[in-house]
Amino acid sequence: MDNTVNFYDHILREMGLMGFRDSTINAVKNDQKLFSIKDESQSVQKVHFNIYFNRLFAYAPELPPSRIRMALNTSNTNDGWLDDMKLVILIFLKSNEDIFFPIPN
Image (cartoon, rainbow, N blue to C red; front, top):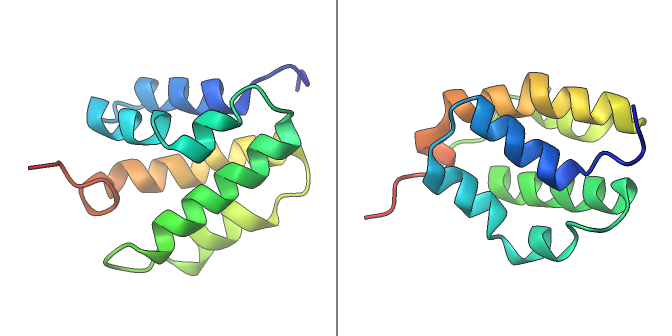
């Protein structure tokens, strides 16, 4: 993988391609901690995305399956982490979008 890939932009683009609602994409895009690291290195972005999604899972009405939480935390390489994000985490979040990103009233 090219080390110039910006995880912040890449994940938001993937969410758009996967058909996440605009309100969901905006919730991720407008998170102040994620926004503040959008121009940082991949390793910094990776850590902050892990914190963001772990926080999202911790405060959700139901706990995600262990395989989902493990996928978020077990990859040691940037390539593997981004693959896990696209193939496991984002697919899980898309299928449970109403639980993790309820539509604001």
